[in-house]
Image 1 (cartoon, rainbow, N blue to C red):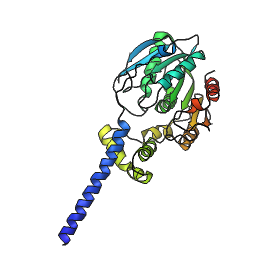
Image 2 (image 1 turned 90 degrees about the horizontal axis):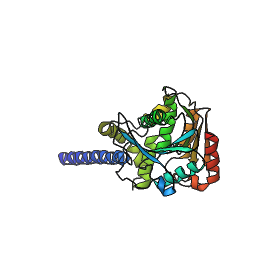
Image 3 (image 1 turned 90 degrees about the vertical axis):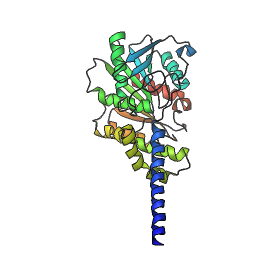
Image 4 (image 1 turned 120 degrees about the vertical axis):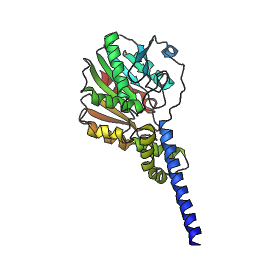
Length: 299
């Protein structure tokens, strides 16, 4: 009887371990799955003249749009995760910012849109996509003054770019960073999303964190804590920066952006959109406020 009982216990434990790591793999796989859709919209949809330029890098090839204007300032636009520069929401902001008089560079990050493949690190190494873009346009278009606008994944990458910028020799100026809904604790974002989009509750999703970290390290050679560690280990940002938060953002909670603002220091400020109830809805919720903040950081 004891042998049968021990066998049942062993089978139960093996099943639970298998289930735990299967669900942990599901979380990790969901996080790293980007998709390969390519949108066909262009600035011409908004009657904007543009040039499509591919930039070869050591990691990948970066697809960019150059939309010139009568301005000495050029805004680099960085899309969110699983999005691309041809997303209609990005294009509508390109149109808006172009109408304000700014020249625009819009990019597809590696693994997104029409860009090539490369290491996917949620912004940690993607800063090099931004630096490669700056170098190319400095050398080939003689651009010297840049601002960076980013959303979510793009916003976090913009902030990491700003923190790294002082260590680089570019002979250009970044006058401001406009970061809408950036993340700090990457793993918390994905565990919250697992709880939100699957039958798992938040307690179960949190229990999966150690397994998710382990499998992400083993399979994807990525540490989910690396984004926060970069912010924690950096000195304060020297570039004027505005962080934008939607008060009821279902993906990036308010406290993450508050913590980011504290880490970035005195050159960073945070603005909350109280009537904004979804991720990426700040512009639509109060367009006038959004544009005023945009102009304040780039003028």
